[in-house]
Image 1: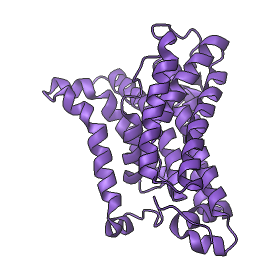
Image 2: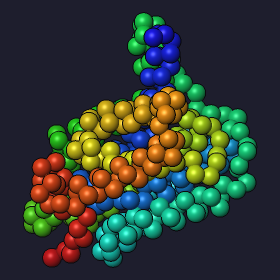
Image 3: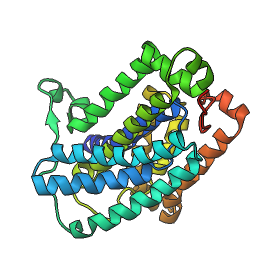
Image 4: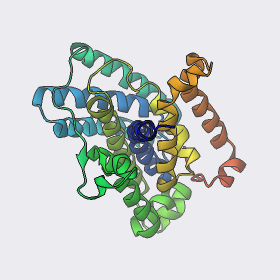
Length: 306
């Protein structure tokens, strides 16, 4: 097999997996605190149109990324208010948020369809390391958000498992009553985790319209938000495992054309995100299965402060 083809394929897999990784990391933090957010697809869509619009008008992709993060935070704030403040059903709220985000992004983005982004976020070259054979082109000639995602994954792992903040987050997701007894403000921990998850989901959407495909088209998230829900479970709520899972799914995404050449229906491939999500939700619906895969014990359950 041609080495250049392998390098290009792996590189495209990393690019396709980066937005999945960002959103997965955000959802891991939220679910570790006990809040499931099925609104990721909507947050990514709104982040994509906000990021593209601000980048186009300002000429700065970094301002676009900031706008994308704020768009994700705004929608996640609604989810936090409904599920934590009002203690409504998390699944219903998340699905409603997805519908709202997709509809709003389509409305806002009408004027941006067909307009190319003149200032996309370009890749950077790491001196010395970029000249290494094979891995140089794969790992050290990438866009800044790719490196940001890897660093964030490592930081989240350290925070969750090596700091007192991580203990507080995990205790809120496992046993909020015990956490409150120890002086942890359950509601605020959950709110901040949901907002952080929304920011990363928004950035993931911005990545799609600023880096992955520097343009705006309606439906450009293409079910990635649903894939993220499955990735959280397949990675066992572990940020480092999420890195592997996200880039593996990114590889599957870029291999779609090859799979079609093998006779696999494109319609079947488009069904994959939704099938994976249904399987993931079925897995977490069983308390026995949840214990086996180390799911947060209080995931999806509203908490009434004492």
